[in-house]
Length: 65
Image 1 (cartoon, one colour):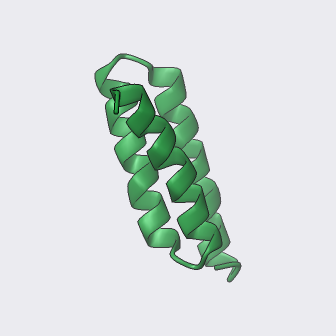
Image 2: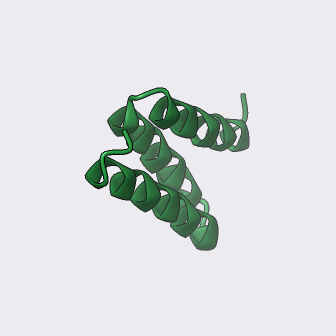
Image 3: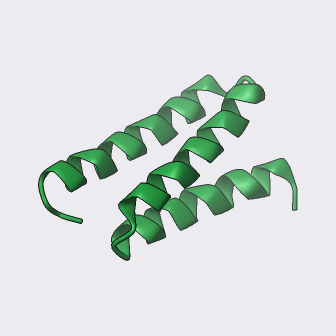
């Protein structure tokens, strides 16, 4: 699998894990995706991963997970 494939896989799995009641594992996957994107200089996409992570964290605080 290419690095891009890993980014996509981490993104989708991260969201799926959060929705399935494992938000912390979902956050970890989003952080892995962000790290790959940062290493490639794709800072806007890395920031988007951070935004998704924040959405999950807010869901945890609000008792959604």
